[in-house]
Image (cartoon, rainbow, N blue to C red; front, side, top):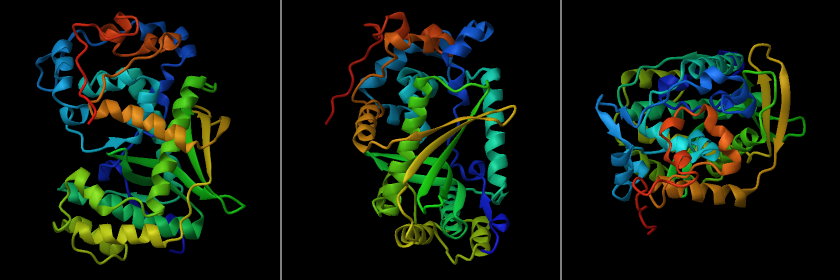
Length: 373
């Protein structure tokens, strides 16, 4: 691959592997914005009888009553979680729970900010390679595209020294986590650095609570990426969680794209074998440096950078706590009283039982969590 610009990868949207890698959504929950956006604060949120996916009213009592029967992973039919699901939990776990149960309440202003951030990320990605869209008809095809991207990106990272939008996946505390790293590159000293881009609607750095969430996100990326290159992620684990059929033949569009990349494969299993061999035999190192770069959306001015210290024990402890909710071992928790300012622009503030109960779920709504096995 002589020139990185000539390489082609499939867009995250096409592969179904998108991961919200930006912080614009949570920026609206910053204290400065909460104080200056009265109109947004006063926007009506969902009522206690909101419409569900089938346009029938959803009772919060009925929602929470089922927690002792089904775990959130089961109730929301989730085979895996995104890294940003856990990062959002770090901001407010109850908001994450409401977001899964009551989707579709994203305010237009927030959606516009997210679109702007996505456009900036896309422009940066196009600086390194072109994107092509490959039609997929099965979940095996969709995952094949993810694997093809990894196969193309590994040699590009080694030869060119940098790559953007690198997919990561791996089992963490019994749950499959997937995500997309903004950028990987080698420094002048030969260290592998992860650079996470965060765009800001206002020309100011985020609050410490936001930085804390961002630091946790990049730490999770490193945790998963390191496991991938160290051979700790296995095909069996991936198949177990995703329920993929490795023997299923790939679709014609995917096969054409694979041949174009120089890969002679017939099934998803063939691709998985190549990916895991490439990861473990490529001499890719673990990530040495974690960096977050905050830039202003409108002017592209760099507002500041954060170098994140990776603390594995702390990351594992947080993940264990957050996964306990997803596995149904405990109820979702809201923010502490000291961080109640986050509620000012939360879409679900009007129905939040944690907020109404001053830090506890109402007795009529609080279910008995499933006991840990």
